[in-house]
Length: 181
Image (cartoon, rainbow, N blue to C red; front, side, top):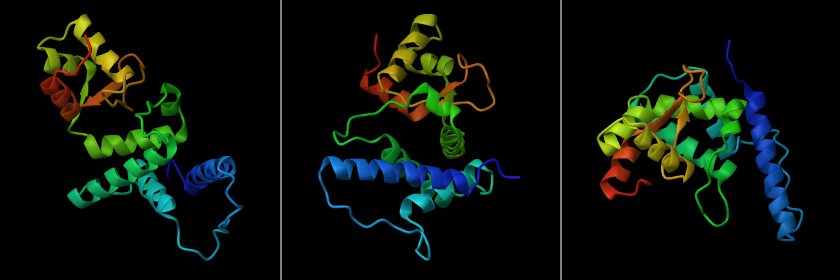
């Protein structure tokens, strides 16, 4: 039995549609076309959500092509949910990961990057040459400042120990010397 179903996709589409209407009202745009959803092709958002939900439910097997499709779908969905007109980096609130959509995003991110996600301790050692409390705090500050993405590890329930960061991001920031002191 699948953990997530089409109702989640419908809920997210409704939230995005409401935000779209709010922005349209703020711009004093005319009422516009209200899609009925009947007999129409699914929207790009709906297709992306269906793909992400399928990944979260374990429907797909990893292939290079599918990993890229899921990565693009995840980027588009997160941009719609968290993006802003100023194109500034939005940090994902910790509470998001406790929602159904947060779990879907987490599982999709794990599915995409399973070999590239490392613990905070490993990130500290990789970036600074040692797994010390001070170095772990520097990694935590990089996460808080939006310099590093993080994903909760679904296998670890302790919120103090379940954060994982992408190895390529840690390496890039290390090489650029952009990690906070």
